Image (cartoon, rainbow, N blue to C red; front, side, top):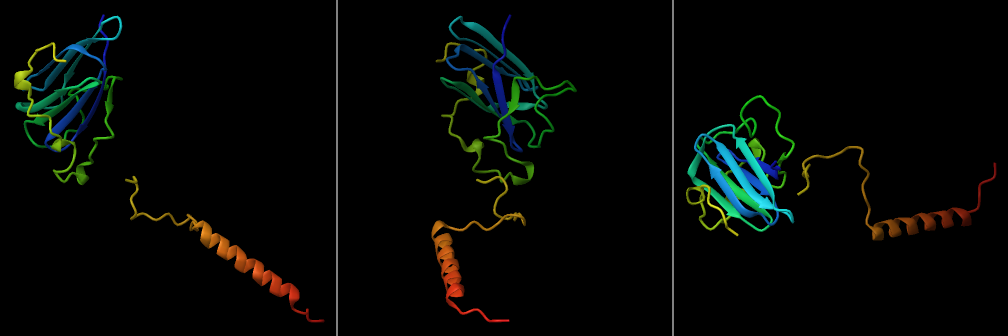
Length: 184
């Protein structure tokens, strides 16, 4: 029986990023077809356990423009969408997303924040693409930003400012003690 490696994903309007987390994968085999079926298999671990996944992606992909990088700790894929549009989810169908498929928040870009440049899509993967990897094996900021203000937050003072304020308060207390009190 095979196991499933953890898969993280993110997207932009024209790309899907898949990262298969499987350290020291041996004989990795990756295949992608234009209809959007992504398959991966490899062995890993001391017992050479077999790991396999098959993902039916939400929509079609451009196999020729897609890229892959097989590293020591993971397999990183940049899948070019056939049509540049935001997907409502990663996988087609009404089934629940498998537990081993998770959002990659390090690469995630919101639809309204996508500028088309400067994100994970600009990674240099050395021109590697799926057309050369079909079933080949043996390859060894602050979230809220500054624009939001929380009205119940107190102003935080620097230590020097606090020391100056404490000294002023002590001086005013000393003055009050030295002044004669009015008699009633």
